[in-house]
Length: 461
Image (cartoon, rainbow, N blue to C red; front, side, top):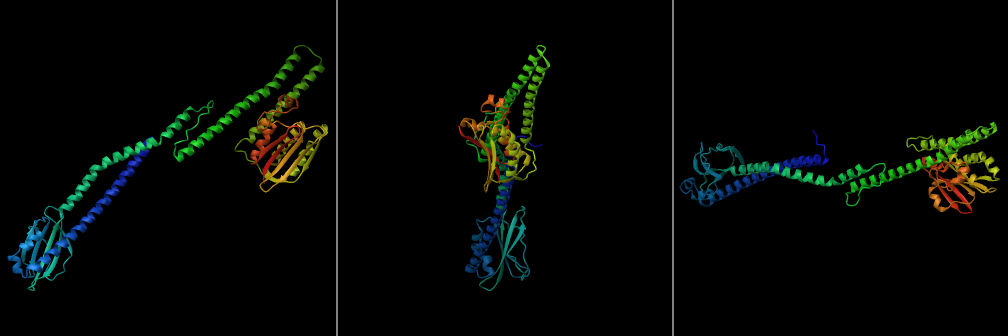
């Protein structure tokens, strides 16, 4: 069963990796030490064999001298308990002339006279340790041939290797416990920012989205995560506030016409009236209901275009033709105020033709509604390498600069009472902004008090 805590998992993972690493390093160290001891044993055996050969050449000229005067050779072996020296003559079978060392009782293999000699031969001692044996044929000054057999008992090397293995096995659990504990502590300390994230996440509610993650002092990965979470909370905070504001505005917008409807109905029903008065009241109520219906339709449209999964059938759109069609539709409204609508320039873009028509209609409707009677409303197209713009400009009182940033909010009005009297719902510009967002474009506004106001749609080319 896997542990549920990430710190424990990482601690166990570090411990397992450390165990594998220690075993690999111990195996490599064992192989290296064993190889070096082997090289040292062979080098020591060869060196000692050379010394014995030199002593024979210097002081002993015959096999009789070896038997009668063995002290020179004995001096070479005394003090080296791991060496054993055997000297044989060249007779068949070979005769033992001398045997010195700790393993005198060891029966060393004797090659046949005239047979090949191995550089080194290995065998087992009575205690079960490896013995390294070297052979050397030497010709004495008298011309006699002798065979030198020098063996090296490697008990000390085996003892050293066994001690290394034993100490490694004893120390391995302590090393793993130490590494595992340190790894768990380091991971536990490194995950401390995540616990801070959890505490903040537990405190976040729809009513309180003001909490933010601490960014300073965090690693790069967690700093990016903290920035992303803070950005998410910031967006959620803005959306929730916008939703709350929208709910308040919607309740306020619906309350006025509903109060009007109920007031008119209650007053009308308070006493008997002639049929003509009932007709007038019904006509007035119908106007209010039409306004409510328009508001609901626009709200449903906004809800549909703000869906992230909405898919539009984009195609090439001639913005001049669409602007001209919209201008023709509003020609009668403009004539009522003795206004003229003109379209200038050319431009093409990709988009949904009906939605683009609706955006232009909303801007042109506002321009005529708030424009000065007898003036000219211009729709100007401008095609540039990176974008195509469509500007709707009218002459009028203009808009104060403090209102410009909020013009595209839902139900926002510069002059609430006058807008209601003119039949506006406060959703037209919000719809324009949503349409432009769907088309990966934007809408901007410029206004000069007492002179003119221009709303501009920016389409990607």
